[in-house]
Image: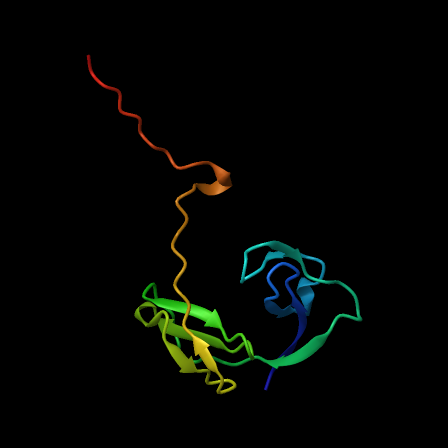
Length: 124
């Protein structure tokens, strides 16, 4: 079984437990809980854990699915979007996990530009 080393830390704003591969140390990423931009703590003294890399043979996520991590064990789950809000047992740890609401695509355009909105003027 293949494994990887993850850095484990908590968001200082919302308390969300975050686990990312150790090669992300010192890099910026958004908190999955509050979307606050965080720096992954650098250094050898940061708590780490060994995580098995699961081979998801035959599992293909489509636009009808939502992909998310278990908050307890970081097992990667794929569920139908219609199951959002349902609670199920994580196949990785057996603890209850709620299928999140799928994130809607942003209406803003790349680069932070606001979407174009036509302005209609009254004809005189």
